[in-house]
Image 1 (spheres, rainbow, N blue to C red):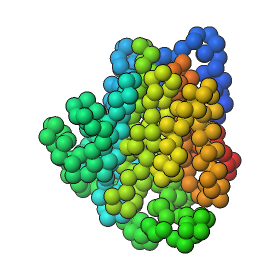
Image 2: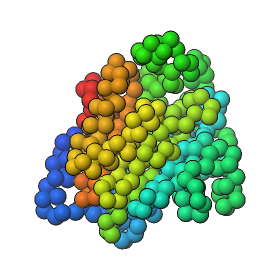
Image 3: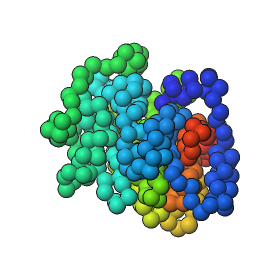
Image 4: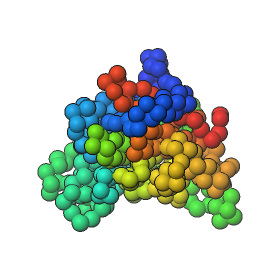
Length: 346
Ligand code: ASP
């Protein structure tokens, strides 16, 4: 979350360069084959989320419960980018995307879900009680209601309302397939993600956990890109896009411009690189390089960050641009926030 991230930095919390985390994970690996349990999540706001997940993991709970409860905790707070307090689409409605995946390739997903506080739990319900993976829009809403989820007001949070009014002044959004795209050049058809101060108006919460049974699970939840076109769905509810878990190998999640992640099946790609023997950091880096290679000029205009955790409990991340942070908790010491390395250095 951009706001919470800034606040966090202002309060002087320790943010370490990713290299120190890679070192610490590697040395842990030498000492002991496996670092478990462990939970990692996107952004500095992940630290509080990890704390909730950690309570479950440290008591020998299951990774799937840890990631769900962690995701719920941020869905229940007011912030720009996750849950009903998030920024709305360009028509003023908050629409939520989420997915979850366990250690047995079971997965559940919701997209374009409105008025439901905990989309990740609806995704889990779909995973556990239906033969399907994904429900969207009105159907997802009806499913949620019929399973005891409460219908909430669609009133914007005070923060979101303020941001929306600000956005309405210019209403900058060009959802057109422009001539440049047809010519294979820069295509800026997505919502303008960059804010005036250079930050981005989106930040998804992705969590990955390895429990004491050495099982992996993951969750990904978001209100998506702020001021998006109505009906737009990003990578976050897409299995293999915003999240992928392969219990033999590892798990990955993403945050950033969803369209870019979808076109390379981003998190599935990261896991496949780990299957080829790459470390989580190397795997994320290779996936980002693949993304940048598609259009290096355009790549400077958007942010994507990948975060990965392997079966040994090693973790790593990589982003297109500087600024992507992630949180790692593997003990009662409270966890740490790390700054990811990035393809472009400024
Ligand atoms: N990945 C999200 C999306 O494209 C945005 C984000 O990470 O905030 O909807």
